[in-house]
Length: 72
Image (cartoon, rainbow, N blue to C red; front, top):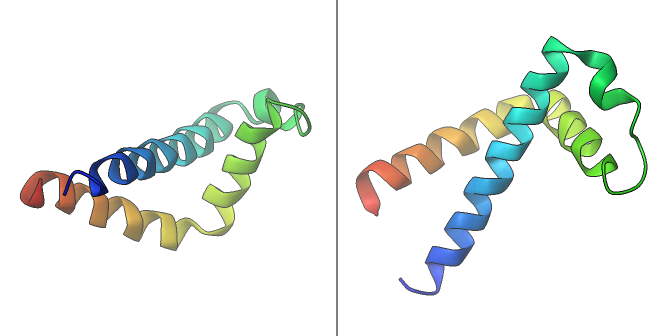
């Protein structure tokens, strides 16, 4: 279980980043759309993943929440 913990934390952070970026873009679209390259382009890519793969991201969030609440 010690080996799974860092992976679980990393997966949680990535899911939260994707959801946060998609939410911020829904509030202020120009904020994330102007930075498509470089280091800040990571946030733009997270927005695209959140928008295009939203059913999969939602399922992953539900599975992660269940895992955190009941398994760990």
